[in-house]
Length: 64
Image (cartoon, rainbow, N blue to C red; front, top):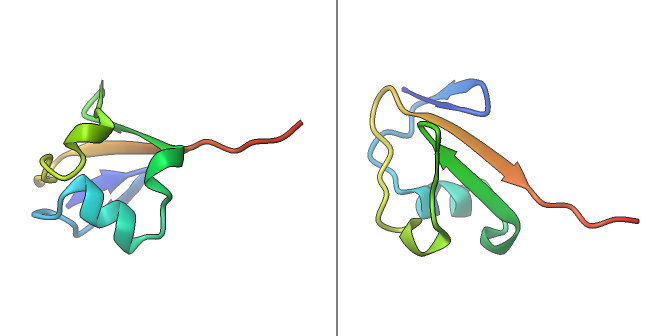
């Protein structure tokens, strides 16, 4: 299981990019932190979730 934004999910083996696409996140408007480290957007397809990972995904929202 992978803990994403406080929820345990069975996404081990999926890349960051796969998960973001499956869940409808806009890749250009999010930041991903994996086990306390920011994941560069260029690495989203290369980084694969493993059991025990802790992930925070922050969505950027415009406003005024």
